[in-house]
Length: 213
Image (tube, rainbow, N blue to C red; front, side, top):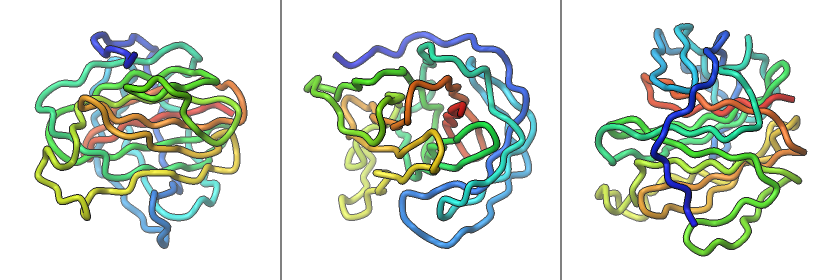
């Protein structure tokens, strides 16, 4: 049964932000994308420092520190605003002491999530085991994301957001397992159980999952 996302988490505040060289779902040359300001809006963590983002091949970039307070407990937050968000890009990057997975969005509103640490992630609807790289997983359910055709996006223009290669450290890869009832499912494959945090950043809207080495 698909988990219901109706509450918010109360993790400790963040101690810094950093996005370095991340991996896009489509292979391409690295490009820098610096944001002037980031104002996180989440009950999971908050941050005021602007993360610098670089897209491209896995190259083991270095970050200033993890966002939020990493634990192995369930992380959840409710979506707000219009349900017309779309995941447009997924990136993975290696940092000093942690790996980072970034989900980027287009559309209005704020996405919600329900993220669990498990060796046996289950598919929405069917309940079947999900395939993923690695021996353990973080099952990330992102709600507020309807089918692209409900947003008027032609099928040949749907974004390809998985699978994404790992960062050659803890994260082995990210697999996309479809959308069900406006909830997108992603499974982050790990080399074993690891503490993690989930943070919402804005301008642009992103959900950031940091996984401790």
